[in-house]
Image (cartoon, rainbow, N blue to C red; front, side, top):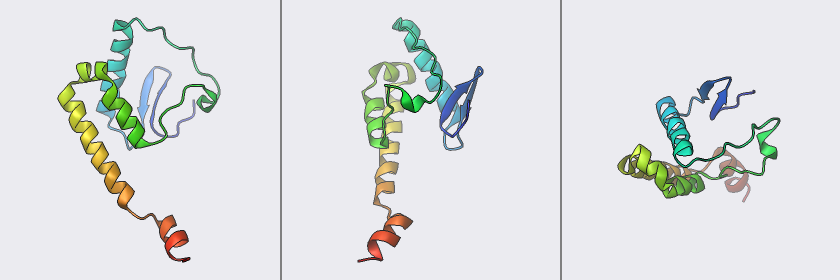
Length: 114
């Protein structure tokens, strides 16, 4: 498996990117495995080739991912509602601050060519 950041399980090891909290990644991975067992979910087939060709799509925006996380009540029960409420609030604030920053591309292509 190639590795391009984010979180990846390969050969029985959990790999996380430098921008991820490894403890949180492990806790969420275990929580999701636990929920799969409790809810008696059937695992999907192993993905071979490019996951981009899959019918399953991950959220493309952080705001959408946070909305989905906030709506996942079973995960709130396992990880703790207070923890996830605070985590989502912090990440929403970080995202709002990020969206207020003018990127170098915007500065160069939009502001300097008016």
